[in-house]
Each structure stands twice: as structure tokens, then as C-alpha cells.
Image (cartoon, rainbow, N blue to C red; front, side, top):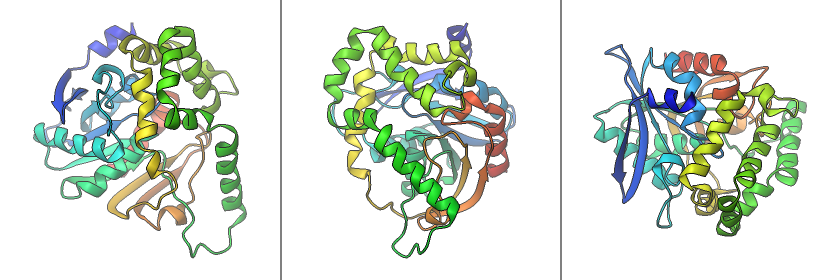
Length: 305
């Protein structure tokens, strides 16, 4: 069923900078629709956006690529596919499609890539919408409020207790790859654990997301043999962790869901981002497009409108 539904959307491949790039291209019925490039992260895929494609296509021409090294883009065959390089590839993709003015949305790695796209292609990117926004305290942050202390504490808990997967993928991705490529159960466990921990699920992933959609997402990794190459994005981008962000003047919208990995602090985010929209919700987690598609599509539509 999910394979048939995925195949109902127009899909293409192209080569950019020596790498195959797979993408969905769903045009809106509105001739004046804004083009919108939507980027997933790990452990997601284009399957993650199944429930938001048709609602968003009423107002946007959608371009939904598979990250290099992920899913139907296939494994990467050289090093250097980090956040900046992917953003440059996305700018090239949108140019090839003839889109001179467009928006960008993403979550997880997709948030970082979308933000970077707004930095490097400001001439063409109208605005950026994200569900994650890394923001460290600026030097002149001053005293923290009670809410800010709680958010900092939650971020510290995540780094201390739940970031093991990221450390492995950023330091030993190839060693991990042998185990995941050898065992479908291992691949399933490696991904489903994140849905257990990062969703509004009360520890039962299928309480938050559709089980078949989750299994389809895992199958994309398994059938394309991209466990190792998807993990390498952590290795390639490890240098950006903990380093100051380049300021972005691109209008930025932020949607925050309570069960995401960590919730950002607005005044920290505003130190390096042109935040023009900020909305916090009372339900949903890291995989908002799967968990609360109604809230996410509404927020994207409201921001770009």
C-alpha cells in the first residue's frame, strides 16, 4: 500500500556534483504557488512526508529530495557530503527546475540544511521554516529564566543520555554499517528506538505514528543499503557541532513540538537568525510530519502566507 502510494507521486533522479539525487516533484494546481523544498533527516526519508504532501500541494510546488547517501539517492561514493555541500546541491536542484524564488522547510538534518540554504542562496530563498534550531547561549546571555533553565537542562540530558547513536555515527559509521547491513532486525531496532524516544508516544512508537508508515521508512534504508552512508552524514558534519552559527538574515519560522529532542530558546535563536515566526505546540515530537501533520502543515502555510 505504501509503495503504491509513494509511486503515485512524480519522482525523478538527477546527478549533482557526481552524486545521484532522487526527488519527488509535486506541482500545485495553483499557478502562483510558491516552490517549497522539503528536507528530511535521520532516521527519516521521503516517506516521512507522506501525510503532508497533498495538503501542502494545494499551496506549494513541492520538491522533496532524498538526502545524498539516503534512500533512493543511493549510497554516497566519496567523502565530503556535509550540510553545506548538500545545501549547495539543493540550490542547484531548484535552479535546474527553474525556480528562482522558493522557500525551504526541514526537520532534524533537514533543519540545518534548510537554514544553510537560506545563508548561501539568499538571492533565491524567500524564507526558511524549521522544526529544530540549534542555538547556544550568546556571550551576553545574562541570567536564565526558569523556563530557559529547564530547556537547557533537557538539552544536557539529551546529550548525556541519548546522543550515543550520534557519537557512534560521527566517529565509527563504517563499523556500525556492517552490523546494520547484515541484519534487518538490527536496522529496525536502530531506527525504531528513536521513534520510541523522540515521539509523543508514551514509549510505544505506534501510538504516535502509523506502524506501516514507520516500517516503510525503515524498509527504505534496508532495501537501498544506505545504513552506512546515511550515518556518514554525522561524520562529515561533526565539525559543525558546538561551533558558532553563521548569521542568517533570511526570514525564519520555527515550529516547536514538546516531545522533540530539545526545545530551543527564542532569544538565543534570535542572536543569529532572523526569526519572524515562532510557535510552540502542546503535542507532537521529532517526527512532526508523521505525528501531527495537521499542525505542521498549518504552521508552514501560515508562515509562508
